[in-house]
Image 1: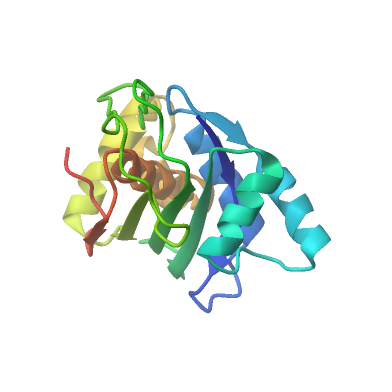
Image 2: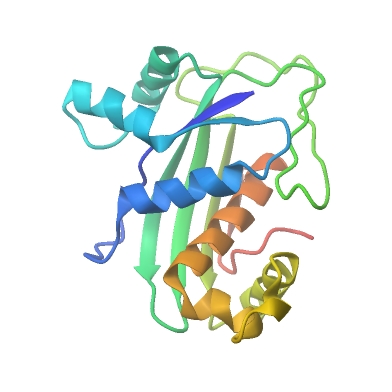
Length: 202
């Protein structure tokens, strides 16, 4: 399954937010998913620039981009909250628009743990309906998020860093990676979920 990653949409009001950098990190985390071919953000940007827009405008627009790139789906992320300073807090809404995966396609959101397979021969979806949707707020001031950060850091070699697991919360880049990882885990396990704590079921 090929997925194109669109530049993130900034709904947070923060001037510190870089939508292209965020999307690049989302695309990087998506490469951990088994069986997914990631179409880079740069190719989506080229389509948007030709259309003289900066971001995906609607569900129908996402489908147009998918067709222009020959992708199976387009991943669209909106950032609803962005405070990168310790303890950081990021709110995300992630939607996947496109063709349902074929029977037997395997989507492994963490590559190291569980696998999830969409149901065979799912019913057709209208262009305005996402295949999956996840809304999360990741606040590192909450104990549940800290516990998830620690698990993420352990999987990414946290013991080999001077700050240990805390490198994820003191580095904007690493915390964004964590948020993308958690959102993708939830999205690929079925999506259509909302949570204030931002933690997918383990």
